[in-house]
Image: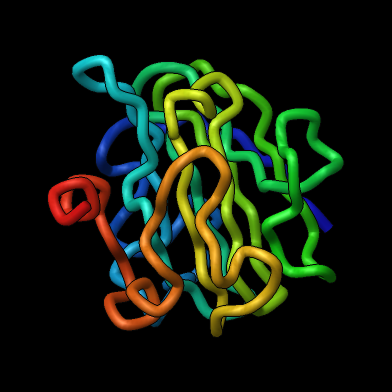
Length: 171
């Protein structure tokens, strides 16, 4: 079941360390972060990190930092996705366009595999990213999304998190 939750952050003390507002313990023990920032800076729009590993059952918070963005799975049910790039039995996700700084969208990833996703307003500007849940697999393996490049699933598994700037410097 998809959970669409918007939370207005009240300041840096609203979320402490690796817990969420709901009081859950650390959501992703395999990675140092359970959030993806959605950013527009210097005429660039991007997800940071661009590559993230989570264990099955891990929840990711997509946090609006600046601009207006979405986190939308490459799935044919969404009009801008030419192909499905998430595991076959996985639930697709779409935050819709978020415009308020500090708002979040959360999604729990239960199905193992590789998930590619994009931002609806900035897909043509190559605002895309990848999440690996548990282990690589599914239709996203072996190729890059049609709208740009992301870290390989194996790079994500090896590092856990790959920041946007780190990836862009190496590619």
